[in-house]
Length: 184
Image (cartoon, rainbow, N blue to C red; front, side):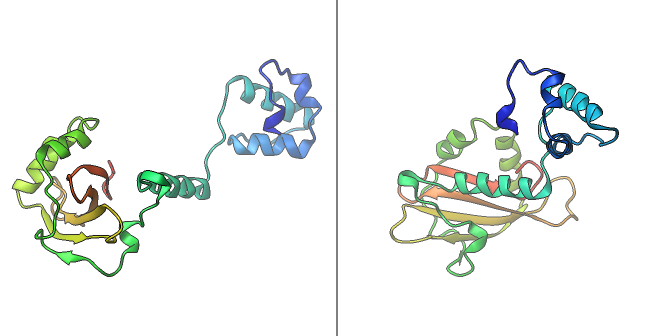
């Protein structure tokens, strides 16, 4: 159906569609279904002209999240690292096994996140970070995970956030990170 969409479509073009196709097109865009075929065609035409996008349903949104997470954890040669939450065993407490992560490594990763650096530093210095753990993933992989829990800065009585960072074992470069807070 979407394959048939062309830049110069008219309302008459939509009249050639089956009612079931028109309804599907309209439903995908959250448009109320009422009337007869001509009404559906007119609504579809205006939805097309307004460039209304297909609304995501819960399943599509969940698939998008999984896809983004998988992309974040894909390293050289297409190797996909496991999600840190999927690693049940092998976590070690404390920072004795951490790679040498320098402030420059964190700044290089954080350069696209304007206020995050200042906020992250204040969380560490004000003891909002706890349950720090390390996972080497595998001896064959040059990255490791560091995870912790973080008490929200403003709502200290709220449930803590879970966050993790994927770091290069040798040079300390941050590959990716994620937090369960709203900002991610």
